[in-house]
Length: 445
Ligand code: SAJ
Image (cartoon, rainbow, N blue to C red; front, side, top):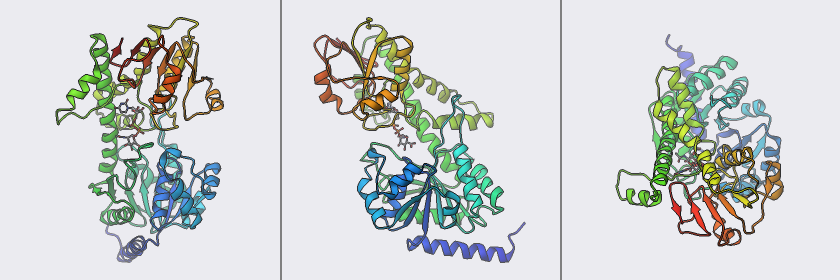
């Protein structure tokens, strides 16, 4: 049924009003979720002249932001955050519904994890959508940055907003999707210099989201033709990484068996232009690569499409902590002094979400291996709170490298003696040190 003239007029009026506001950085922006995605994004918009409200149910995060304190050291936003708060461009609140009412643009950046059965858990996304709906978002632009399964932004976010507000997406409010590409601990690829994928429900929704990100992203915007296309781009990016890491982990097991060096193989293969190098290791952690592909698998299953390659790849990556455990068991003698170096899921971050290091420690405990843990990013008390014995930087019999933090270069001098055996879960040591190095896909004896 055609949209009545009057409604068309209001729609056009809403559209031009918010477009002007965005163009002149007068649009007030609310960012729901102040974690690894939402906080840097809030600071980025504030730094570029917008008035931003960071929204989060976690009162501690809200208080820290309003004090100008950054709780994500690896995001490199300390100074910009402090300045934005001091200038009154950035503030934070837990009054989600109330605050959403006062914004022109709402960006959803809530976590989308999986549950214990690896099933997508979109409860926080549904809550955010419901809060936005209850705030009657007439004439507002809603952007979803949370990683979701294809079709979710319209069929879940849009639908819940409509259920709560009786407002229609693309008619009474504008709906867009721009999947986050935040890479914690990576100072080279920052928000501003990473190409940004954008999509809108309709042309006006698209124009608004493009105009918005153009104000802050220096890298090219990558426009795709539909919300589902943008969601699927993100699924592909992280599934592609999971599958390639799984392949190299499988190859590493083969190389170990026939005693050749997987790193030598990778270095040589890099000379071929079609080859993109990935590295074998103790496993895949973080909130993205071990999680997002399960969203794609679940949605494919809902459509009766099997994805055995991706399924197997996830299982292969999840098998790596056990592979490293077997290396430890091949040399371990009760009574030996064992230290696990690293808890974080990758180097340079203090983040243990889905960390393979934690999984390895759990498996070692189950095997009654007596060990201590040291991670330069965690205080002894924090290691203890995680249920492990805090380790010291002194010589050990077996050093297990679970996270290849750069500090290991120096710390190794205190940890490794002539008789130390290194189980190198991240192939950190390129040359032989100690009595021998058993890596993933290589041995140095
Ligand atoms: N890993 C390997 N071998 C590799 C690369 C990584 O074992 O060759 C392991 C890492 O040690 C880590 C895990 O995989 O445990 C994930 O590492 P990552 O470098 O992919 O880091 P994330 O999860 O912090 O960031 C990823 C990135 N995605 C891609 O590169 C496709 C980042 O760009 C995304 O923004 C982020 O996921 C996200 O938010 O989706």
